[in-house]
Structures are given as structure tokens and as C-alpha cells.
Amino acid sequence: MKDKLNLICILGTFIGIVLSRIIDKHYGDNGKITIVGSIIVIIALSILYLIIKKNYLSAIVIFAILLPLIIGFIGMYLNSLYLVIGSIASIFIIAPIMIKLIPKYMNNKKQ
Image (cartoon, rainbow, N blue to C red; front, side, top):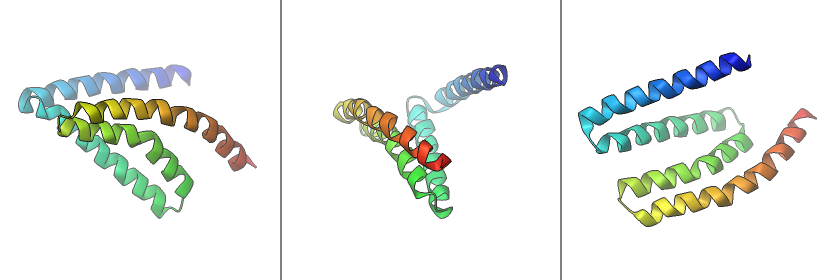
């Protein structure tokens, strides 16, 4: 199982690099913003799906984890170094909180 997961991760990374280079050749620097924007739309749809399925806590946790990505995307789009730095700083704020909260959530879910 672990070997299959490693293979999937390597394959996903390779496909991502190839797609990024193809889109970058066609659209230039704005291609990277397009890729990140597409990823954020997919993530937003995933969170909406969790909300529709009434799995609110999971939706909140995923949103909190992905909030730095959203802030960083807005910073890239607006060419604002302050927003990009803010997104990096928010990773160091949100990560320890999630590290403490997620095991508690998993233990409550098992019971």
C-alpha cells in the first residue's frame, strides 16, 4: 500500500509539473495565477460539497488549512508582497492550532 501511495504521489507531481510548463508556455506569468485560481475553485466546490453533506466541522478544518493558500493567491493576483508574506505567516499560526485540534476531532469521531 505504501509503495502504491508513493507511486501516486510521484505521478501526481510529474503530471503537475508537465501541466504547469504547458500552461506557462501558452499564458506566460499569468498561467500560474490561472492554475492556482483553478485549484481554489476546485477546493471551494469540495468545501461546498462537505457543507451539503452536513459535515460542517470537516469543512471548517479544510477551510482553515487552506486559508493561507487563498490569501497567497490574492497576493499573487494583486502583486502584493504584504499579502504573500501574510499568507506565509498565517501558515505558522494555523498549523500548530490544527495539529492540536485534528487529533481531538479524530478521537471524538472514533467514539
